[in-house]
Amino acid sequence: MRLMWDAILTGLVRRSSRLKRAATTRQRNQIGFRSHSVHISPAIAVRSFARMPSLAEFSAQLARCAQSEQEVRDFVEAFSKIRLRYIARAMAAARLSDLDPAIRATGQQLSLPVCPDWSDPAKLSASGLTPNQVAGTTDPGSGWLHIDIAMDPASVPTVASFIMATCLSDKQRRALFPALSRMSFSASAIRDQRRREVPRLNAWLAWSRVEGIDTVLFGDYQKHLRIHGASQNAGGAVGAAGGAIAILDAIQEVAPGITLDLLGALPRSDSRDPISVDTFLREHGIAPESNDRPLKCILLPNRRAVVFASDPDVAIIQSLDAPFQTALEAWEVYAEVRSDSTRRAQRLVEFAVGEIKAATDVSNLHERLALGSRESRSERQTDRFLMMAILTGDLLTGGSGPSGRRNTRAPLQSRETGRFADIFNLHHAWGWDGGRERHPEHWAWLKRRLKEWCGI
Picture 1 (cartoon, rainbow, N blue to C red):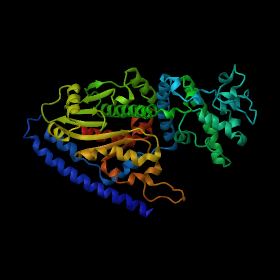
Picture 2 (cartoon, rainbow, N blue to C red; picture 1 turned 90 degrees about the horizontal axis):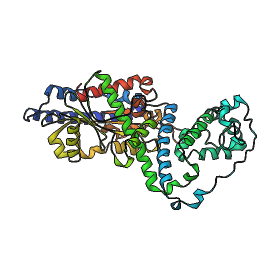
Picture 3 (cartoon, rainbow, N blue to C red; picture 1 turned 135 degrees about the horizontal axis):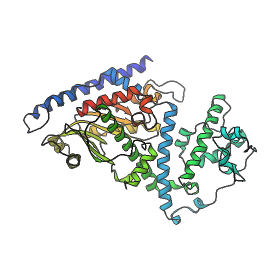
Picture 4 (cartoon, rainbow, N blue to C red; picture 1 turned 45 degrees about the vertical axis):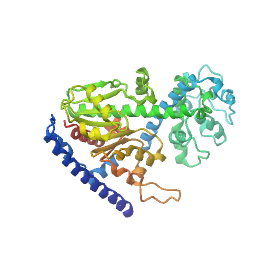
């Protein structure tokens, strides 16, 4: 434990030194404000940069970012559905001649080692089913997983067939249905978890049928690398919109009644879960590969702008020339200089930049941190934040390796993390399922930092 905290403190001290150097550079940058014909209040600008998180505050941030196992499953499930929706649309559009003939073969007939009672209401309820769902069919076991089948050791191959029918990847299956994915489940804790997962699996199967997902065509969709890669972009586009929802809502809570000029739009407040956001993007013709955003810019009354683009996903800026008059103007100026660090520094002051990551694979955390911190290549002298999921307790405090010994160095103590002034949990901040209410301190900190960065 002592080694773990020594590692944490060492990383935080290094981060503190970087922040001090960045703050010094920012103070030097402020000198140029009076020499330009700039309509920025020096007091507002300095106040925005003056408040940096302390070491204790940054450590507390990481603790507030942690998700429970249930929250992780909910997030993974939502984004798995988004990927499957995209894959289903792309596969339906593909020519069948491009697919392996084996993919078009009929599914195999399932043989059931036990004979479950499909007329028992208690058993149906334990399976997450209703009598109406199994009525009118002579073989309900071909479409639904019965609780008795799930708990029968001799029926493991049948359960595996249902898991395959979800069209999820191996990693997604283990994340959403870890107990049902096991070949052995004699331990009481695993058996209890397995029972809880049966209704979830049947709910997934019901959803996939409503969506019109053809499981027969999914057997080998990975051969279509373009479809596979674009499905990941689909999740990223929805995640970016979720981050924009969090930022817009936070600004409006910090300053109720504030007048904002918006370039673009977001879904209604009652339709902001990931599936609804995905539907909204498709209805507005936003393709995953386009890197387009439904909400491109927010212009604040003080003429600062919050821009949503890519690389970085978020930038809070103000003009060093004449003040921005519209969100469209701010967007056009930023788009013109975004990739040119010299011109960007000549025309804009950046109060914060951020990355939004919606990847659901816990094992690639280091890759996500590296991608989220890639802006260090352009040496942006400003606060930088990361908003991402999945963040679990093990990622924050260290997990157990194959030997069973607890690691003393958690992934979020890596050198990539120190490049950020703040780290937020996308799931908590998005709040479509009550995350803001479950984690009020996390939501309060995001609002506090946005208040400082936006000068409101």
